[in-house]
Image 1 (cartoon, rainbow, N blue to C red):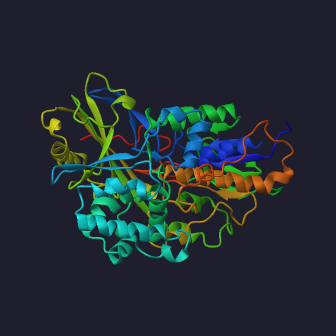
Image 2 (cartoon, helix red, strand yellow):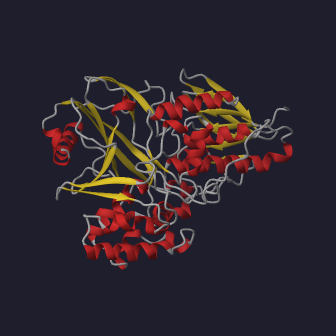
Image 3 (tube, rainbow, N blue to C red):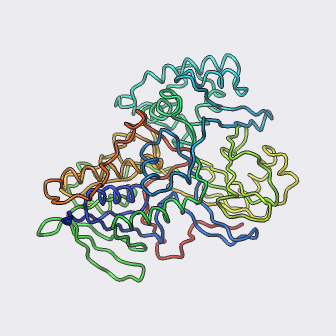
Length: 504
């Protein structure tokens, strides 16, 4: 094979890794730069020496859905699909702590939207009248076009109110799903993004919302397996290296100034550059004129996610996960197996999205808040001893999906030839999820490959064409709860690779 054009990918999260793999598959010579000591961005793992033993901890809890075709491609591409199995059919236990009632959101084999009819008919967290109101709103939502620009400026909460949804309807159904997928409550969400989530995940295809949960740490998927796939593809990966500047080269192509963990500077050249970092970092790296409104990147807000980790001395939850109502707790996951916890205890991880009011609270305060709530939800926890309690905080976990945000999200192409953008915050039409991140990387790689195709004299033998996410099954997808997001060039890149751990 004749060597193809060179490409530099800045950012080693899911967007950057996906772009690098896709470009390498099409014959490009790729270098990937990541400022942290690991790949995976905001969907990664670290080690913790706990009173319960040495643990592998995911910095946040992530799942995906059957309709997440791009992320499923990613898992296949890195040889890890079997490590994140899907449910046979959607089944989410929903426990109301205030009323002490357990319900389920589950599907049948009927076509959508009838696949949810039996579940909604018996859903104990809504009255008969509220269930009827919800059905009418769901059919109205199904008729919306998420790509209609007029929807982007409207609030999902206002739309729900106009369609007769009570506060209980919003809490027990729309926010139960929406907060996890969008990282915001209905009143703070663009109607376009909400319509995309609910139409794609729940209202179009019956199997779309079947949940996939990693059976191994996220680091095994997004760092170890992804790193091995990059290596097999000939991608050069440089960790703990920060890109300080990107500028056009005098003789064509691009020059990037980088600095490694030891502070040593270097200059890299490439025909193509993909910036797969968060929007503010992208703004700082863009050359003049690359975007018509670069300031729009700074107007894209961010939203936090808080994760609470509790190690008990015995099992207290009999299910892989559950969603909760009537309590500050949102979603609870059993991560005992993936964490490596031994000795008969149980490791629960609470994923708390839209956590703006709690993200900076002290660990001791969070402990006092959440341990009693877990005892309300899970009676066995009342007799169990807590062996460890800690939190992880992602203060800028996702972009804020507020009304009007889609107008600010650029596509993969810039006005500068050879410079492309990727990240879950770009114009994928999706909220900030692992699926959106992978799609953005593939879109950037395809744009770069299309522009470079006449100059690329060789293609990888048997190299796969870029996937067209959604076309394999005719569906799109969302990943929930919690979001993957683009890789960040962490300001603490030169610190030890355990930046999230906090103790009481």
